[in-house]
Length: 232
Image (spheres, rainbow, N blue to C red):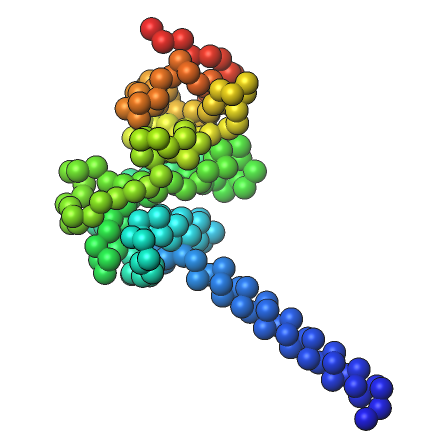
């Protein structure tokens, strides 16, 4: 066998292995998601990349709710009828929405909240386009036996792990930013004046004293202003 033939064989083997590795990496990346099967019925305008973001986030929260030793089951997921809420803020060029998603096979339900803009560089989306949280008691009508975790539980959990949090009805979104002199710095975005008030109420509902954190607000003109919240 000539050196040229040996080189061709080795090159062929290397190329084959690279192709296999690429395919494996691609399918592995796609596998860490749970697809929602009726976007086109209830959220037709949601772009495909944001659907993928929701599918990936849904996988992670389902994984979070696994019992020790339990393997994840990729249950078919569906948007619950009559739960979709959508709005468009023309001034900020942000589409916002939410819906309840049911996973019938594993008897779980969650609320999905999202925002997006046709301008991918729009700062008003805050870099946190998707949040998934557990349902309130009155919404958890299908699977009341499901003890849900979404990372927002307040008992001993650092604030960093409880965020981001979105309330489309507030409206407001709270994101974690960084620590400053051992104090948590958070941002309240996508909010109205009433939404900012509700954001403070949400913090208190999680046993977080607003006077112990630094809150950054993004006003309607996108000017970031930071101040230490003083409790009344």
